[in-house]
Image (cartoon, rainbow, N blue to C red; front, side):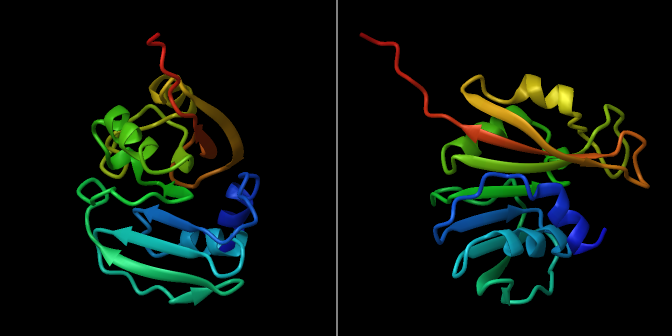
Length: 174
């Protein structure tokens, strides 16, 4: 996939216009990292994390800084609040997706997710997240919106992009 295609897929996400810090969990070679960098306001920061060592530029787009950290997206310490998280073709590697999404809700109000729209597991997509299954696993205090879709040469169902807005829980204790 080319950067311009990745950008088109996630371009409808509602990203505010203030400088911000994002995480890209499972960044791979950085195609979606660079697409996100084109959408973020100037002087923003993306911390890109991947299990394999990656060679990403340190600056891209409108003076968006990119820092790479090597590590397993499931083992990282999510103790810093960020304005958004991008997961492009990486949630399907997480076995306990409900627990992981709850961890993300603790640190960010916005998740942009790109996944194959399939229910069939394979070596490259061990825990598939079709859009209908995503609707069942996101917390009920979240808003989900499909923001893009495209064909894939790897999966017949294609790819989709979704925006998840995590709302804060409202206490019902009186």
